Image 1 (cartoon, rainbow, N blue to C red):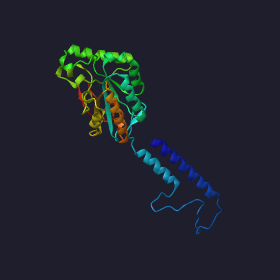
Image 2: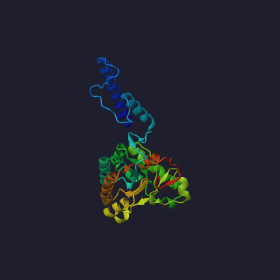
Image 3: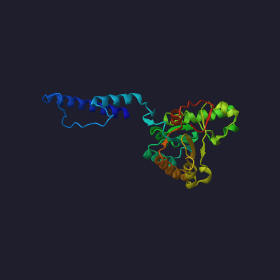
Image 4: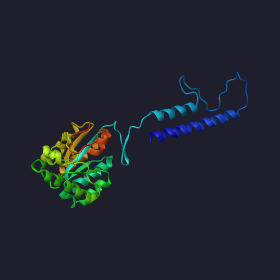
Length: 280
């Protein structure tokens, strides 16, 4: 948009120069010693450009020298120089809460990441489809919410693959990231998910307190650029808190982005088998 505005200004200034030149050509000849001031021409301060053409040229050079600072994600733009945070919601889908969250995010131009439990997806397929259609990220939270550190290698792989299959069947998108149930892991877990694993650095404990005020305070008292916030989609109090958090983050100038959007905007390439708790 900045480029298009500058090009429009340059075109207008060039047209103005042409008009000035035509007006000057139409003026009667006067002696070389007589000052000539055309109608509408104003004296410029010292150091200002001498001609309209110079203004246009300087504007063009400025446009060429100023780098683009916005990262394009799909059809929206993310500025890596402005603060951003990833709001994440586990254990869904659950339309009674999830749809309220998405309504609020739509109002403020935000996106979130929903870590879904595979055996719930088919029942609430329309909500999952809405997540995708509105640009949110659907992600893997296991098929049956089993704790991976208690499973064998083959059982871990089965939980991951079946959840990915269920989500893809519901909405046509296969998840690219995973959150471990409870965040629990050991070397067997790390070696067998075959996906980037997303942790968090702000834990609201909303599942424990079920208190909207405490959840809001847990986020707004600590939130910084690059943070990943853990909340849950199952509780009405979490939905109440999310609405307040989203509005306040917007007021503070935060961009609310998906995990994958933030990783890319911050210059990270997420790798299978690796853990990520923030992107600073």
